[in-house]
Image 1: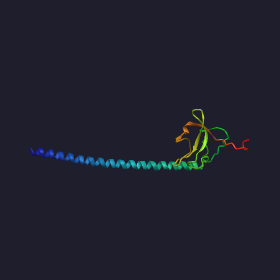
Image 2: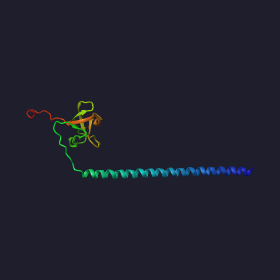
Image 3: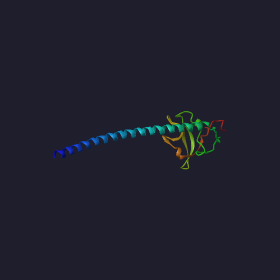
Image 4: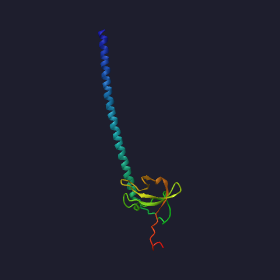
Length: 148
């Protein structure tokens, strides 16, 4: 009978040791997977940043094409946006007349917010780029003698 108890104790001890080994192997595996995932993320970020730099280099080599916009003519947004110079400083918005998807004409502010990356059409805090189908610059204000 003592042989049986010793075998059971030995088997229980082996199982406990195997469980500890399995847990430590799993922890090491998780750590290795985490490190591999971080390495993959960093590698992907490096590859993406190289692609972006290549795109920037290509874009910088392209000739600048200035589209002459006729005074008082509507410009579809598919053909271009107002000149960025029209929004001279960050946070300085100019009004642009816009034809919207609803078929009406509205003046929207056009410019870049602080921390913004590109100018947008704005109605209060809302970006309206997807609602504008065409735009034109606001006419010069009336001045006596100049406008007739």
